[in-house]
Length: 164
Image (cartoon, rainbow, N blue to C red; front, side, top):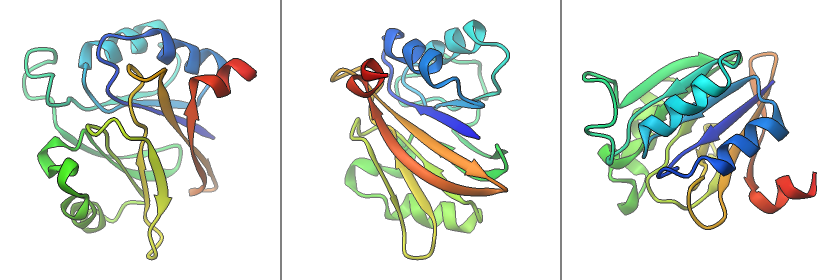
């Protein structure tokens, strides 16, 4: 199963829509900045399960009480989803990893830095920042799952989609 992970769209929807149309994911995640972009995407593709958390720019863009951290099972794997600003990820991801490990998840997903990266820690925890779907031509994250495990994690760039 394929999970599309997006973040930091900042009112730029074109790349996000292109990702959904080309990838045809089994689930979508939007990690904030701007929350209402995620809502538009959810409404455009209502058949795809959708998960969302607000970012630091979303104070007035989302319903009150919207959780900033979401821990849920998506496509058979347990995910820790957050924008990252509360964990101060621009200074490092140590606090984020600590909280994700305490939640006993398979992967931690965050945004905020606009820097795309995906790796696996020595203890098996997957770490993904999809970068920014709204800036620099756009980046997104892809998680491939099977039988309750993450098989692959990769970063997708706009140029990759245009070659398909």
